[in-house]
Image (spheres, protein in one colour):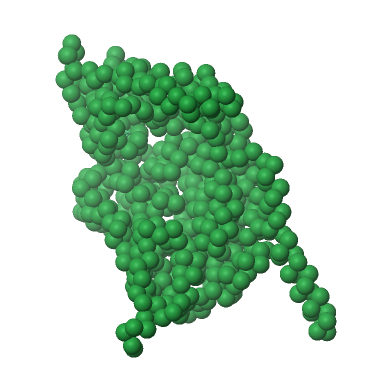
Length: 368
Length: 180
Ligand code: SF4
Ligand code: SF4
């Protein structure tokens, strides 16, 4: 190729269209991207290594920071791995509360993701609305866990505290409120001419391509494959809760956004169902106190369905107070590096931010 | 379907999709989600004030019951707590550095005598950064209390906001001296 025909631009990390702290080097020919290389590493905090020097419980304060918009999946997957090595049984009520927290977290993350997508196509009303409603979810988290963004609420063995008495009522109220808002998001965003023009047919992927490249979660469901860890490998209380796995056929940008919009409705349904079926009893199993907490030798891979895809923790213990090794399998690592590099080829520069946003890439989880 | 029919459908679709987003205009009449802090109180969906009781904010420590066991310093994932000698006290007391604390509340959980607590007060404003390494005592520090009283007396109206904008230095902190 003639050297003067292509331009290389550096997109991010200081770019309003980029989803967090990572950069792309795009080789352009005119307006078309011919080659994309992802440059992660701006947010590398060596979490996996740090965790080897901290006790099992101290790590609970560390893991939620790996994915900022959807922090609870980290605590849950990490705790589940430990429980499995120790053979701990979580009380039923603890599992129900875990499910509620995980769904609230998914709800908040999807609202934020949809808002970001609205921002990427220049529809700034949507992020204002979704972030406004997300704030009510954060209020719920605050009343339940004591933290708004990082909750540090799920422990090995259950959850730290029981729900306050008036919390279920408040939660149902917030659910009603968000459900009432959903149609207006739909008419604002999905029934708009602009969204049609920008998202329909944007970077379509097929199921076989997606499976080959390790795409999981809503992005895979948008291609028509019915997979959902909540149903296929139930954890927490999902086995006893009612919900549908949302799939769409098209596999394009519109389908990816719509799956998320429908999943907000499903999350609301799960939370309502869990509050209704909430059993009594303790919320945490009998465990040794945190400073005397030892995990017998063993290893386990625990995975959960996060708002972005499959989220897994591989924990190895050689006995003692500290983990020997913890490995985090984040969905954004595959979506944000390999998949994105291939999907951006032959797309227009103006769509780069939209494709990244549509995949719901979360850079803190790429770098860890 | 005849071509004419399809055209009519496309036209109505076009009109619908062009008009629908303008429904958002009705939100102009709604109250905004944002509040003018600290003049307005932040409420949850039922109108109850936030932060709630469980909110993890600034520490207090009851020196009567604290047995100086140091467990809080050992569990702290951020190494924010140090057991220090205090003048006029026989026992060492935990000193918290807010430059490091991540407000996880583990120190509260692990405390055998239930003396350490995280209050729901989160306002930390002071010109002197040294203020934020201090010994939690039975009560909130002076500089925190001063702020709470002031905000709770304020009610939002335009006059207040204008006044606050005019005299940005009206609220002075800096009373919390480090005990040593
Ligand atoms: S854990 Fe409690 S009793 Fe022990 S030193 Fe800390 S505050 Fe005092
Ligand atoms: S709240 Fe957490 S980080 Fe802060 S002092 Fe207590 S244990 Fe340490």
